[in-house]
Image (tube, rainbow, N blue to C red; front, side, top):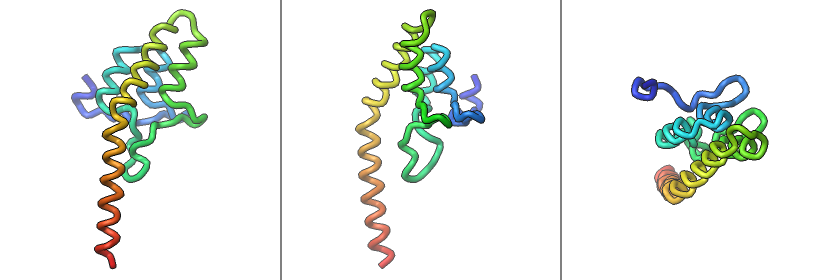
Length: 117
């Protein structure tokens, strides 16, 4: 599989779509699950923006895409809703670790600033 070979799941196309957004748009539940298990919900940035959800050029996230598709399509609406639910579950599960990391970042930042004095 491409992930085993080090494929970049964070790469975005010219419109800002990444792999998770495409899976959400196409109703690909198992692919979305695989991507989420590999941290596709986060940006590829380091620093303070690393905890943000990637967005398209129009400001859409994978969650907003899945939710929109769940209400606008007939053939895949159940899969789209399952993807939206999966993303929400994943975000809830990882929210605590993100908050802990942000607190640690602030703690390290404060120590660093004190060392600079």
